[in-house]
Image (cartoon, rainbow, N blue to C red; front, side):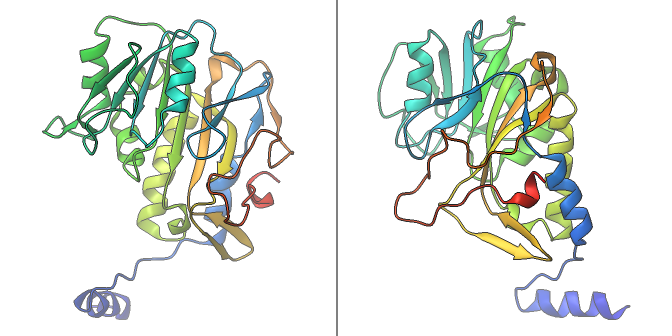
Length: 263
């Protein structure tokens, strides 16, 4: 048995994990694939002025339904969509319902996961239960505290392609130098980038960041993915933070998207 295996087993006996590190070049390659693009439409802010507000391409015309797993203390994002005539399907097993009731809201007390086993349901089964024969475009907004990677990887590509816009808060990105996390996150992002481009990225300043090998990696980033079928222009974004970006948490240091993510 090699010295690396011996060290890994010894660390495991004391509750620690020593994984194979990922090179700075591999991490840089991944984050550069996530560089936000000017897709030909201005961005608009949907939701409140703090946590729970997101920037989306101004291209909501014709979208009738939004799926929103993860229910927070506020549902301003979903409520503003409802004001535009968009029905919102919400799901979260940790709460008994959204903080406000609207006829446009349909809530299920379930977590979104990779299998249909109570209290979990998959994105595929959720969509089939809510809109079994609907083939039009959809909107997805997902903040599920780290489950986003497994959920995206387990969602059929044909269902993902139905979403015109996907807004997802990605957690644990400071672990990108760890081999397992890098492989999982990279597979998830590569799957999304097959049919989507990144239209916006905003670090959530509720959490910290990692600085290593000349790279700054925010631990939590809100990504807006835009379906390639809707893209009319593809030019690098260079202005960060965007004028509509607002810190998620007041009283904490502002965290703009680091330059290594877009240059």
